[in-house]
Image 1 (spheres, rainbow, N blue to C red):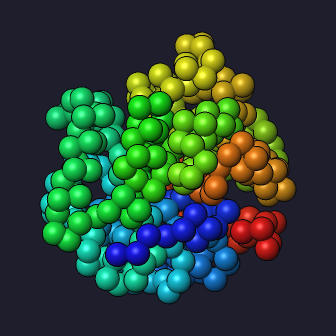
Image 2: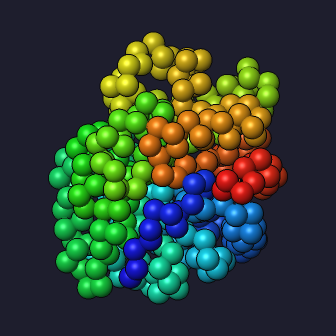
Length: 296
């Protein structure tokens, strides 16, 4: 397999938990194929299949596109044994011809019954990917990393890091921890709504779930937020730090803040009030592509 360069990811991509073809019917798979083909035509740099995708989900997105990089954001290591994942990813990569990246993560204790010693589990998983035939080499994978130890592992044993639900301050700290050469591709959730009260309400519908997960809250506490910021779905201060809320130009500005803080690439997740993150917000994707223009 061939490693992607940092430049190949582009500056701005799309992250969507709705790109799971294995979880829907024929009509749903057709809608996903049409959506990702359009995202490629719009010029987005990388398509991130969000929400614990499987290799089969990745294969479907690769098959529906031609040149755009495709990444998992993030494959749950507890759900896919390394040797099995390596074999299935080899088939995906054969079709992708150098444009697929395996994003890996340890998920969260409340969501995984067997969750234990996440750092050691990730090290063992990477060892198994290295030893597999065919292997998944460091330049062909990224890690979901928030804390210093996992960020260092991402720099040492992978192409880089794909942090989720982070601030620009975290991005600056992650860049320092990773060093200058590792890929840094944070996710940024977007609500395209100029009514800020309504936009924050939409954001809270999504954020409330994540505030039940200790990995995220511990990271936010490290960044200087307080327990009080987690109440009632998130304080205004927390929401404004974690999300891009407003029109497309504001999203463009917020994306620039992450890039200025040290990100190589920003993966935008569009959240809408009616879809709750579960649909394919193609109109919003078009609106953002128009705003970014040649900067994608």
